[in-house]
Amino acid sequence: MSTVNVVIGYCGVCCDHCAMSTRIPEMAAELMRYITAYGYREWIHNVTREFEFNNLLKGLEWFANSSCQGCKGAGGMPGCEVRVCCSGKKLANCYFCDIFPLCEKLNYQKETYHLEEHFEKIKRLGYDIWLREQEKKIEENFDNIAYLEKGE
Image 1 (tube, rainbow, N blue to C red):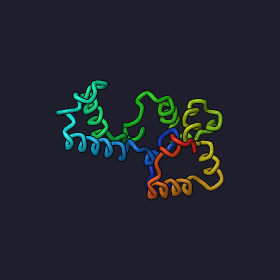
Image 2: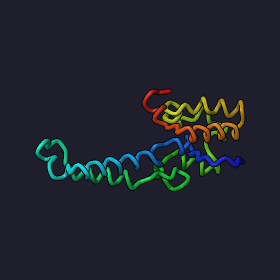
Image 3: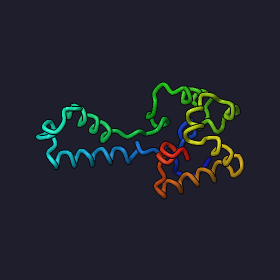
Image 4: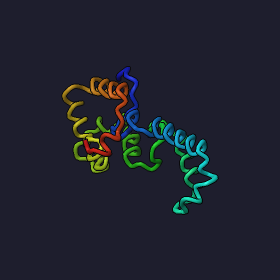
């Protein structure tokens, strides 16, 4: 296999492109820092009662202290049927499965993260070259938000 240091989930999505590994915890911590420094706890109730301030802080603290390690590192969704299927077949990820093009377990990932385009590229260029491309995207700070917001 490759010596490229990229984490690919069982579904074929590059975990290193996910904001939950670094960006979201950093942003949540930064927002908590600002909220604390500006003293919102003391006066926000005079401006709005539309949300429970302590619940906002609890949520931000949860995000600030969490970091998904990907499905292969005990992160991700515990009961994911893709994880169960791939690990049961002892496959590194779905790209190595004979039924990948037809698998309905991947409909969300195929639609959202363009897995079929990645699969075609892997078939054309090889898995190691595709991994190197994912690594280059990491170096360029690519984030899956590009897929999620724009549908690119």
